[in-house]
Image (cartoon, rainbow, N blue to C red):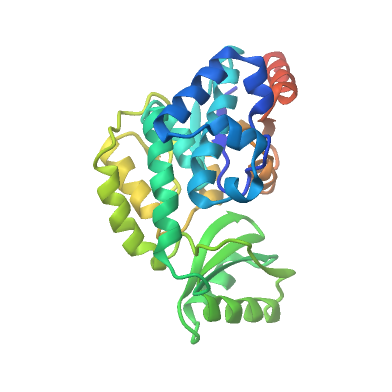
Length: 310
C-alpha cells in the first residue's frame, strides 16, 4: 500500500479548526507556538475562536490553515502513519512542502502571510471574479475561455471531471458563465472570493512574490512531491521555488496531479487538514482509490486504525 497525503487550500478554513488536536497533543501545542512566534500574533486564538471575519482575511487564512494542516500531519506522525508522496491544492502546496521537509514551518507561515497580502493587493476590488462551472468537459470550457470577446478569462482550477473553476476580469467571467450554461453546464456559480487567482491577472503579484521567496531557504524533498502547475514530481529546490511563483498566475491541474500520483502506484489518499473538499474531488478522479481524512482526534484515530488494518 502506498499512501499520498493531500493538503487542502483556501476555503477549507473554519473557526475551531485544529483545536481538538491542540488539546490532545503537546507536539501540536509546540507547533502553534512556533507559528505564533513567527507571525507575531496568537495563531491558536484566532484559529480556535475567530472572529470569522478576521480569520477569513486572505493573509490570516493562509498561515492559519497551513498550521492546522501541519497539526494533523504531526498527529499522524505520532500514530506512525507516513506518506509515500505529498501534494496540496493551491495554498495546500505549502503544507505539502513542510511535510516533505522542503520548508520549515516558521518560513512557511511567514511566506503564506506575505502571499496572502500580495494576492489581496494584486487586483482592485470588483475588477476580478472567479466562478465554478459544473457538468462540462474541460475542452469545452477551454474553448469558451479562449473565444471570449468580453475581456480576459481562463481556467484557474481543473479540479475533477465535471468541476472546473474559471478566473479573470469580471465581465469576461460573467459572459463565460452564460455561455457555459448555453453549452449545457449544470451550474455556473460565482465564488465568494475577492481575488481572481491562478490567472494572468496575478502575474505582477508573482513577480513581487518571487522577490519575497528569495529570502526563504528551500531544501531537497524528503518525500516525493507533485506540483500543481505541471502535475509532475519535483525535488529540486530551485524548480519548486519557480513552481510556487508560477502557481499564482497559472492553472492548478488538480485532476492531473491525482492521476500522476495514482500512476506512481499510490492507491490510498489521506486528506490532511480541515474539511473534506479534496476527498470529494479524488472520488471523482480515481473512484477505486481508498480515501481518508484527518482533521481532529476522532478522524485521526479512525484513519490510523483503518490504515493499519489494510
